[in-house]
Length: 421
Image 1 (cartoon, rainbow, N blue to C red):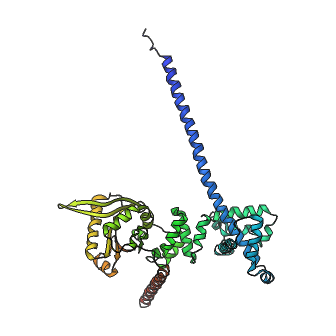
Image 2: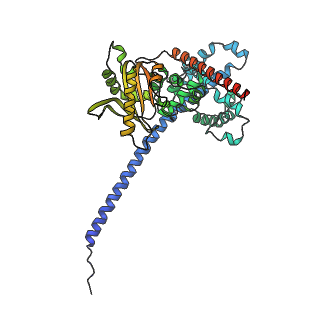
Image 3: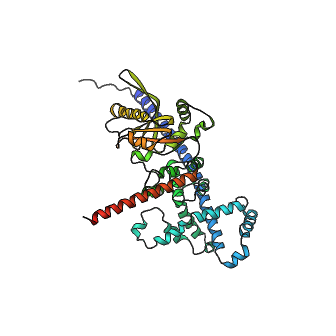
């Protein structure tokens, strides 16, 4: 009868104990990691909650002031312009800092700028329940929480709590962001920057820079009237190559505007040194791959200044820098770069390569004449200084008027055509 295999029970128990100890240590480390992760998340959430609470508080303070001012001629005559100062002195004495005359005027302006939270609801009151459920918090829900007069909140903390909860879901940025947004007078432009700040996690300094660089106007200049409205409703959507193009690109962060002359190498180096700033200026989805990308054929070497990849469009984007006026040879060279990447670099499941020529000046007529209609190549000017916002706005108004006139003429021609059919 064959002997049964001998099992070293001591070794088995030792191995089992070691495994159990490792498992226990792993579980304990995981437990500690979970505590640390939760602590970090809650601290971040608490900071955000405090910031949003500050925004809601300031909106309510502005509402109180406006409601009081609108309470009748008697109040207006009694207080007039002295209201804010008297209120500032009293609140500073009773509540402390944060209630200066300038702060109260800012709260009032904040409420007046974002009073559509209440006003828009009146137009939505007749909507059916199905439509009312399409958004997390509609203005109508907030208005239902608003008493007819803010003074009805006195002694009713439950109503105030319900109101602040709904307002907290409406405001999506911190107070410093909203103070910056108050500098934007156009409601569509302001809403665009609000959406983009959230989508791109802009700090308030980056928000200031984007406003000062005229991002809204620069994007709007390459779009029709309906697409401009879409910017305010949905922010910048990246769906086709033209969506990533700006004109001009603002490169003030390079510091080259202080120099009398600079080379293409100087410009390239300055952009690489400030690559984070350049990626923000390029826009959504850009990933940096390389500079001076070399490729060779026919015993000759060629170098692409900058190569990027856009994860939203799923394609390569090659950029060539020109410090002077754009020439037709530059366009031909870019066409060769794009062809090379399409034929030898990109994979079958990736979209066609986009070529961008950044130049100091260009002729639109030269670009149109040189490139075929379906070319995936774009020429954009760059500036080494922040643009004149008013000049950009005027340029946008002129472009919109031209767009409307063109489409109006097209409609007239089409209608005449139908008439004679």
